[in-house]
Image (tube, rainbow, N blue to C red; front, side):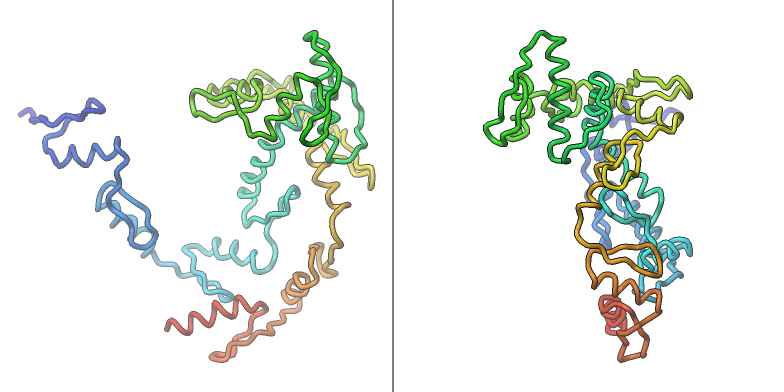
Length: 330
């Protein structure tokens, strides 16, 4: 017996025997999610999905409890990771100092810096190959400007454009007339080159060209050693140093060398930063004496903040406050 599927979806070829089933299905196309989780506010297409979500996420047993702050976890490994935060053992990003509980979280975060630095690093790489600059011992604020000027001068000669430098009337930095127009877009916020696929806008046509490779998956630059492919030439040049071990960027203060200019730039901030307070028990450093004092309590197991209800001790007042809230909730 052939089912009667008289109710047909207007957005796709599917059809249904009952109108109610079609109504639920059409929410997939319309993105209407009328059922909301009362615990976290997440929305769903069907009421049954809410029930499964609540039972699977919010009502699941969480037997592993942090004794310091009362947080509960499904797995012991998750509790161990959480405790790293209390002990100050999180993974630190060397670029911005942000800390993460997992190595994979740090790796994912590092991609943000790599994407932001792609253009800067590519400018630097192109200058190295085209102009032959061995080392640019200039202040960080002018470093990129010098490199951009040299790169643009090289490109201007190739294109037959004027290489005369003109000052920006907003910030005073000097560029060739063609590049000055692009530079001023940074002040005005103008981004005239738009991606037709995702509508993201860019200041320069080459930025749009590079961006389009992300949509197409094009990776035209191939490593001759391992054949890994890359979207940008600068990415390939950085990757090749993995094989060669080359560290061309040297700190003029301490002599430490780096594979990437962006890493050197971040390192130089340490020399220019405020006084650091060092822990004599481990290698951690802090910008404030109060932060170091709290950290030292972890080494000394000092729990100077005591609960008046159960006499349990804590090394931070915020943790004691969270603990007292648990008593108040009982």
